[in-house]
Image (tube, rainbow, N blue to C red; front, side, top):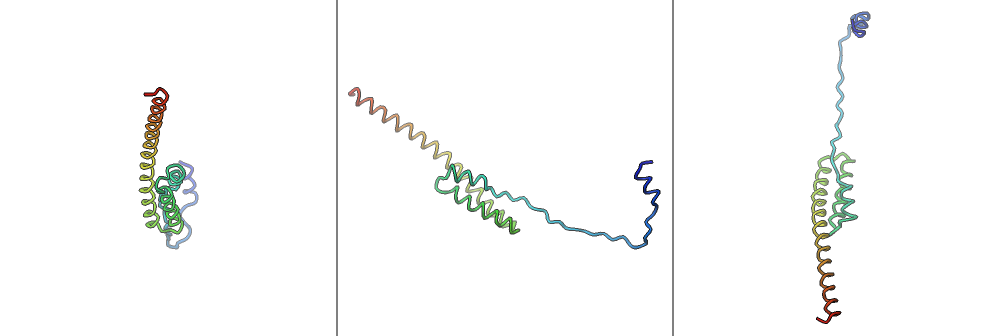
Length: 122
């Protein structure tokens, strides 16, 4: 016989004849709403072309505020806007950074060729 079965057998039936009652506790689950604040901060510091990173950071802070108040729908709306702005800031930041580097290389090459022409007299 298992130990738990032995303890139940020793204790026997419940002594009270009162009806059994149950208590149901509803615990509100904390819905995880990502506010993208770290991504927004990264875009604000490093890829802030057209101030999209800063605007995304503002929406992320609004999303976090709405989440703290308990407005899950508002938090999701602000988080969705922040995510969209972060995507645009990242894409524009990558393209414009690469474009600036390529343009800088072409300008340096043209300046180098012009310096060579002036030096050699072509």
